[in-house]
Image 1 (cartoon, rainbow, N blue to C red):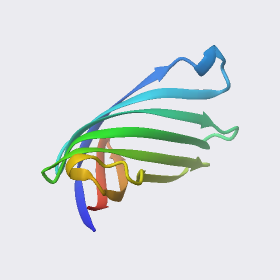
Image 2 (spheres, rainbow, N blue to C red):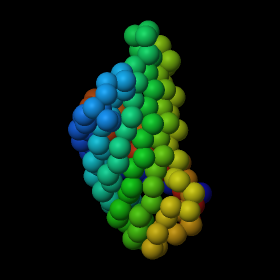
Image 3 (cartoon, rainbow, N blue to C red):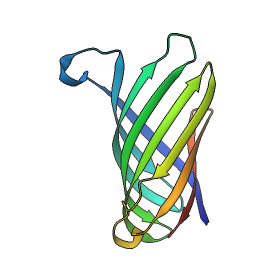
Image 4 (spheres, rainbow, N blue to C red):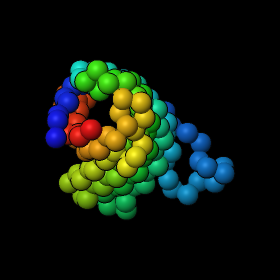
Length: 128
């Protein structure tokens, strides 16, 4: 496995509830700009819910990444599954199988993100 690490900026934009019905779920669009060995943009959608206890929540998201990974151009899709259990986070971000195109065909891997002092960074363990 190879590793690519760098920074990214993210913009989350709240969306109206699906079907105009408020089910207690939050919907957002995702726009990211990755820097470093992954020079790319991504766009996606997130669905989130708050638990009844402070610090408990969950979200799922799908984002399509388009750009270059260590010089190879193409696209791929990331699937997010995150929970916060009374303040304890758990996050899994995985490349959707067979979603890679172009020079990223066959890409597999997992990404971790870190937020420190308002700055976002990623660590992407991958294989081609």
